[in-house]
Image (tube, rainbow, N blue to C red; front, side):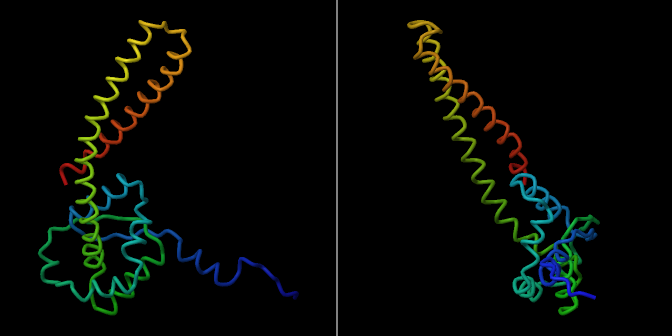
Length: 191
């Protein structure tokens, strides 16, 4: 049988296997569930990628496991929730769980707590965005008024007004996109 020189066989194949999606169910707090959903939706990150980022680092996960107090964890009101994770992330959880005789649920719960600082920082930025949006809207309304004034002085067909119209149209679209983004970001306000 001839030897096959397939570049896809070997280490690269194992890398792909580690990225396979698997479902895993954890019993974690509603706040942790909300944090995962909020970061994933608001920041446009897939939950699987988020889990890969916060759990796959074995050193950080090991350090975290050393700080978890199981009695405190057991006091947390928890719900069952199924997530899609990469096989590598599941293996990392399993390995640390076994090494420290720690429930996977606890590792997930406390790993997700790391997201709270990201969410709080984003919440502050959201408040600043709202202030800037008010200023932008006032600026845009001034531009709209100037455009209408220019039409009154020069006429709608004047080249100046036609160029100005493009700016006003772009500003309307930008304002609408920003308003939609801020509306979607309102979930941060109640976190």
